[in-house]
Image (cartoon, rainbow, N blue to C red; front, side):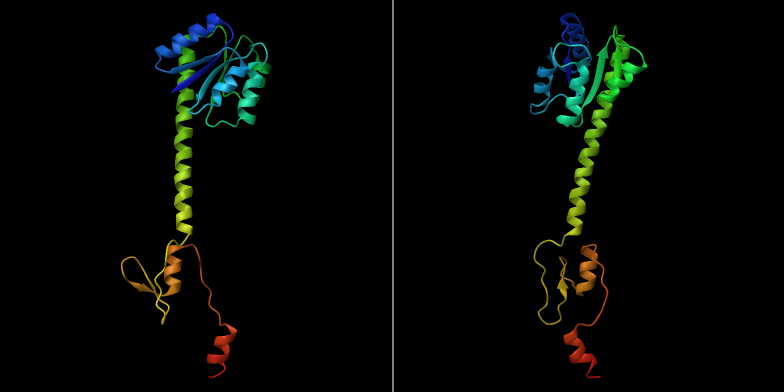
Length: 196
C-alpha cells in the first residue's frame, strides 16, 4: 500500500520514510501541502497519509480539510502528526477530516499500529465499495427485462431461455419487480362483458 508522507522537517521525514519502508509500505514523500495535493490527484494515489500539522503555507489541518471536502478522495485515511497536544487540538484535527492523531515525539510501535489500523480501514472501504458496485449492477440487471422477448402472435405467451412458454404476467413477475392487477379495458368490456 502507498503511504503519503507530508513533512517539512527533513529529519522527521527521513525517519518516517525509513520506518514505513521497513514496514513494507510504498512511500511517497512531500514537503508541503501543495505537493501533497498534487500527489493525491495522480492515477493510483496513496490511500494513507501521515501529515505534519505545522508546515509553511498550507498546514496539515487545511490539507486534511481540502483532501476530505474538496478532492473527496475515497478511501483516504489521514493521520495528523503534531507537537500540539490537548483535547482542543485533537478535536480541531479530527474535525478537519483527519482520521487519527499522533503527537510528536511519536513512539515507533504506536505509529506502526496506527498505520496498520489505517491500512485495514482503507482495505475494508475498498472491498465495501466494490461489493456495493457489484450489488448495484446486479440490482439493475434484476430490474430490467433484457433482450428480445419471443412472444406468440396468437396467444401472447412468452418463450423463456429453456424453450418453455409462459403467460405474460408470470414471465414478467419472474424477471422483474412488476406486480399485476387485473381490470377490463373499454374495448374488451364492449366485446365481451356487454355481450353476456
